[in-house]
Length: 265
Image (cartoon, rainbow, N blue to C red):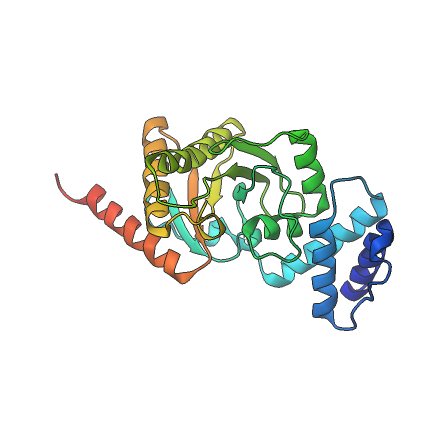
């Protein structure tokens, strides 16, 4: 079966679930179909679906991810011992765990085709992830600064660490900084409990949550390095960035940190 045939089958099944979508026509173009499929997955509430659908969805998503290209941590070079910096799509990274900047509901982003990392991760992991998160949360909300762990389903990593970062609506406060540091530490502690050997962090709370990029990076690097030192941890940590501006921020911070660590006392 071709990707187009899989995609049309999946769209038809999702449209049939909701009578209010019955008037939607499936676009002729592949891009239009892909957008519609993603949108329907994004707005779908947690709920069971047929094994046939899941099998078809898994085949479709794994083919899509393969076409995007998978990056393995084994092919990356550390910028310093135990720490990597990588610019790319975190859903295509093969390592033990990736970090999702989640909202407090912990069941993903429901805005069709939204550009946030929460939406991207749920889209390519598959609808099983939303159901697993809903079962885990049981209608409760997650505290800011805490973390939960799930399987990664169709992603090339093994686990997803979900954490809720602080949302900045005014002046950055000391409490905001403490909560962001708690996100990183909570993820690392949970990863250690599950025997995770490599964890990729996105830029938690920046972007949609408006945490200043430079300060967020400083907190991320400081917290990770402190955790590694305090726990004699051999966990490999990847700082994953999508924008070049964030790459430059992290690169400068890590090179400066490496220089301090290697300079004679």
